[in-house]
Length: 562
Ligand SMILES: *[C@@H]1O[C@H](CO)[C@@H](O)[C@H](O)[C@H]1NC(C)=O
Ligand SMILES: *[C@@H]1O[C@H](CO)[C@@H](O)[C@H](O)[C@H]1NC(C)=O
Ligand SMILES: *[C@@H]1O[C@H](CO)[C@@H](O)[C@H](O)[C@H]1NC(C)=O
Ligand SMILES: *[C@@H]1O[C@H](CO)[C@@H](O)[C@H](O)[C@H]1NC(C)=O
Ligand SMILES: *[C@@H]1O[C@H](CO)[C@@H](O)[C@H](O)[C@H]1NC(C)=O
Ligand SMILES: *[C@@H]1O[C@H](CO)[C@@H](O)[C@H](O)[C@H]1NC(C)=O
Image 1 (cartoon, rainbow, N blue to C red):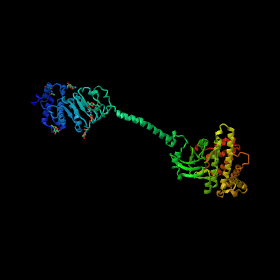
Image 2 (image 1 turned 90 degrees about the vertical axis):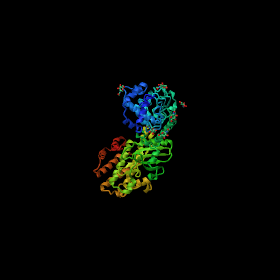
Image 3 (image 1 turned 45 degrees about the vertical axis):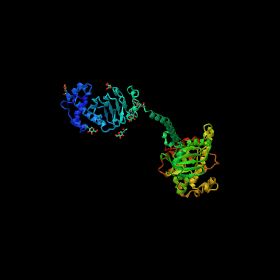
Image 4 (image 1 turned 180 degrees about the horizontal axis):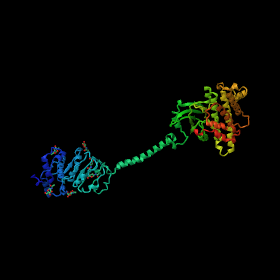
């Protein structure tokens, strides 16, 4: 201890004392094991007398234990920094590229609190420092150089805490992850140029900003174009990908139908004629549909008409009318999309399964109910009433499936009386077709294939046998009882009346419905309340169809079906 008074740097004096005790143990062990010597109080008191600027001298009350620990850390740190003469001076803390020990020394806050005045430079670069800025360091206010570059420091940069560091001339904060701050505006940091803050996060990164700007200027329009393009494609081509409320109801696109039919695959083609292909398909939502496709090219005017017609057809809603789901209208490609019906048409049904009279009655009733609905609600809508075009799903409830809206539809608004005449003409022609249909059901013959005069020949043939020889023309497979025979005879009579184009009177659908429902009722105890109600109207049957619309309303009992 003799050297104490001689040495100019009193801090160092203590170091030399400690070094002589032990340097083999690590700094942590030393902190744990070493105790201040007896005369430690006297030593530092004397130090402070000689040099009152020493940091520990100004602390009050003096914590001898803490000051002693400070001297231990100081001696280790001096050695770690490879200072050539820790006894004489301690000018630099140099822990460059020492990721293991740099954080350890930073954690000794009591050391930085009494930071030795001899230290003029601190270099902790490339030492894997993490977390927030080590503000304790800045208690060494006398330093001239500070390098914290190449670390992973983050968070706020303590601009204010730098202001006491008047002698700082070299600073390096490069390559860290600080939050951007206003160092470039602070008076203090004016003495440093941007090379002190390269990639530190502190300065606004102009290059990065420019890249972002370019990206924004170029990328955003491209993005918008892509989005608009995609949306446009979806809207125009595949609206079925849109939410339901954004879709145009009932409107189908060729792409949708192509997707529904597996690209119009042969497997899905269920019917074909000159102008129309009939496909079976599955929509994106799983609905099974029938798709009638017309490939021919038509004029703009006709296309407009087609759309008008389709708009009417999708409104049809009855249990005996195939449900039309929508249409597709493109120049070379028009289509009508309907519900898919599993089953067969009436013609094949008659040929294939020899249905009994009761089933035929039910079939005819369904057809007449559908006709009543159309006549009452949609007198403009014509339909194809033929055994080959009436579908018969497995539940035996027949479906009228082919429609044609007469051309006068657009003129109805202006020429009401003319329209009424047209409606009447449609009605008469449908009644005639119903007559043929009834006769076909009873006879199970095909007028166009089996008779030279076609339909007229067929009608003549039945008429010839009516009433006396009717038995001869009736289908044997009906296996009629006497009662059934009488009923069939009544139906035949109406069939003949309906096909009589020379008669001037306007025939009524009510008549045939009465006959059919009465007959059907005699068969079944399963008659639904609907049937009873219909039957109840029988007595009021009116020959003047125009003046008795109520009966059709009552016949039309299945609107809720759709
Ligand atoms: C000083 O550091 C060197 C390595 O740089 C080491 O070998 C030596 O033991 C240390 N001395 C003390 C007293 O800690
Ligand atoms: C250290 O010594 C001074 C006077 O020499 C005395 O006032 C002070 O209480 C002592 N401190 C401790 C912690 O012993
Ligand atoms: C940083 O330190 C690692 C060792 O920790 C060393 O391999 C590397 O070269 C150093 N990088 C620089 C730029 O000094
Ligand atoms: C800066 O250096 C001068 C002289 O070198 C010294 O007097 C002054 O105290 C130093 N400033 C600080 C804050 O240590
Ligand atoms: C930044 O300042 C240093 C001196 O402090 C100088 O060597 C360097 O060229 C300067 N760099 C720029 C980009 O001004
Ligand atoms: C700070 O450190 C980085 C990385 O080592 C170096 O590129 C840069 O020049 C340094 N800046 C100064 C001012 O020393």
